[in-house]
Length: 254
Figure 1 (tube, rainbow, N blue to C red):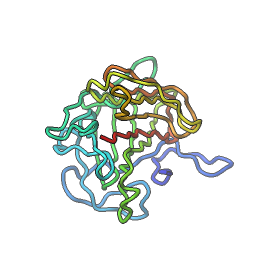
Figure 2 (cartoon, rainbow, N blue to C red):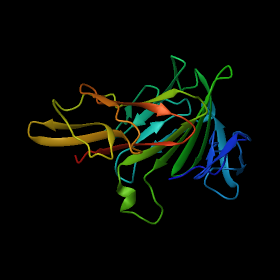
Figure 3 (tube, one colour):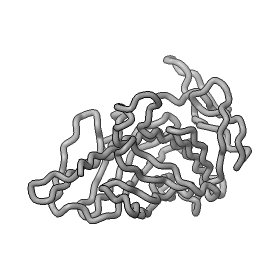
């Protein structure tokens, strides 16, 4: 997964090719109307609607076909979720998903602290978080696991995030707070070496009820935590102009 195709003006050549100091996922303009947009990964402009965060009334759902879903709103916060079989009605989640720490200050990436722009071309959703008062920019690209024409792969419960920033010496925190009381028996789950993060499995007696994992998949960090009471998963790590990859996945058989 590479998004190094739509840089800003600042760039430099390296021995192994071109490294861009900043990745621009899309052009935040023509808000609220269908228009051609330059989007990373496409050779030609694509038709899409770019929204200012607060104007996106229908949040983007993440999850595969018949796997449950969760939403991230244009304000950068969690919205509804049907994970853990909460369908009628869907569960209402809360909390800002991404936070940036730079120069010793932690800034939630939401519409209270950032000018948010969203451009979606399903099953991909792109976010630009421009921290107010001339602060850094964070780009987030989220891939829902829906592949046109491949119903088996589209049944994969998860989402992949790519994240980059123009800030130096920065840390990113990703927090997925599922907001429910999980089953009474919680077990830590060891992850394979290529997944660096946190995972928990949940049981009712001897009955397995579900598992969640939030992890880096780029091999650069091994920091992750999960709380056992309400299934809150937190991942932190260094971030720069080179995109980083994170996976959030689940298995809830009931």
